[in-house]
Length: 570
Image (cartoon, rainbow, N blue to C red):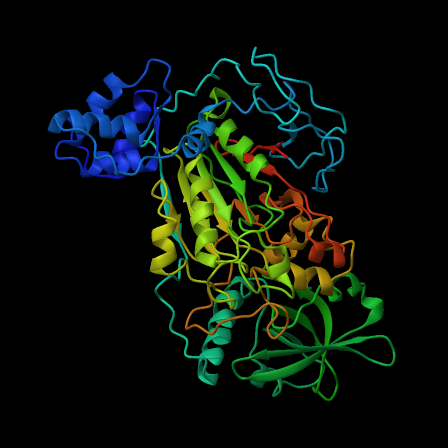
């Protein structure tokens, strides 16, 4: 059997029931005859081994050369070996045998109190999101002794390893809207003009079928009393002395004002408006034709009739974000339990891992951050993150995007890392793409966006429409506006490009974000919006701004039904 790539070697080992250390895969790939060496390594491995190590491969290579290993050749230490092999154990964490569901239709997030380590928190069906029961999870009864932290007791027998025979011939993963290596902006004024022109052109197309649109300059020439409609970017919103609202729209021909009367019943819509978003206004021109009295407002929005895709087999994806390796508060034990669980038979259907940014804590992201860092070197942070990523099964398809703590530009869209960091993150053939990006996973369209603009949406909109406790509701607003970061000049930095990569041109089936460190999910016009929490306990900075993070959660998405189970490992 030809073994022309690391991925092929991992697949072959997985088909025989083995995981492998990354160093072992590298040694196999560089061997003169990888297939023969792999076969020998498997035959010579101890009967109770669940993972092929670098030492197993070296023993085969050394015996083939009929020479002793050099005394000064580096070997993994026993401690390092134990760390790498930890992922072959069952997680041993407490979890319920049944999945809990409710009947809430508003997509409210789960409550995080009273949930046992490794527990099944909740499951959302296609019709809407559910909240978990606030009860302690019951222990597993698989015969493995447990300690309170979910780790098997000393002397316990090895846990059962999942038969993760890869279905590579059935996997389908395509990346869209990836701007990595395609940046065109120079920061000049004309670049910003082009970005907003592209935004207007693409979003206005979504609205032209709903209103009889006229350009601003044409409306200015129409007689008073005429019915008119305009599509434009919101240039200004202000209230009048009488309690009405004046909204100025701008298109490629000019600007025109629209007056929204307080007695028109549009107040609930006005308080959702953000600067620079695309909007359509219908109404009647004043007698002097100098203003448009608005009767209705239209957002680009997601059609209520959106039909979702789905895999043609039972396969799952884990949605996680905000790992923050390098922080004093990174919950390494919880990540280890998550990685261990991925090796269990229960997790066999999980074939994809989608990471929505902030893999590391970064350096200099906020004031006095250095006082909360366990690792102060950014490259070392990525190296340690890569070691933690190696603990997950080698046959997982991994896709990751950067976040605002990662070593990329802060302005969005963010390209997917430079070559030096990509080399560090070259684990299990991970796909590294830009923020945002679209990922088509076996017929399910997933929009991945780290989520910095959620801060702005939550700050600008009423609490009942967007809050940190309900992060998915803020995501609904971005879906309604069909743009992941509509407001320019505020908290969210936007880079000028010829194409506005932040436009949500195609409707996703799943919208996955992170950033706010809160867990929440729900359905908006059949689109599942998921904010996946974090893997970092509360820092002093978060405490100072009253952020209470939801830590150690892993939403597990069924790609065939779009049902979602949320598991807790912290």
